[in-house]
Length: 168
Image (cartoon, rainbow, N blue to C red; front, side, top):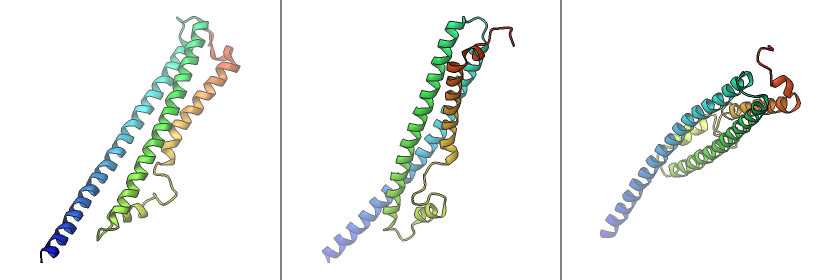
């Protein structure tokens, strides 16, 4: 009789632990998504600031032309590094989301109702598909293309980019 009780207790304890682990994973996944949204806002703001300063410096009359080209090249480089860091960060977020989602699906196999698994397979996040949206990856790439465009203009057409004040 004691063996039945101890087996039942082990089963209930194991179920309780699995339920706690499940809750921790769900909370962790929600936190990652929240961090992802906040970081995307940060990166859009940072790149928007770099683009704004680029536009301002291009037309600034109080900066010597030689210094202006150095400032513009530096800002373009900083902007490109921001974009590459942003893309790397999104890759890390993607791996974290996918690993936690896989763990949740495996954990749910022992539950009577696999809610996350059903939602996961009903949503766009199918096997082989990215956990990040195309738009989410497109934004840093769009900024990066813009910086490459500005760098190309600065390198091949510096006289066009380095407009003298009052010559508009």
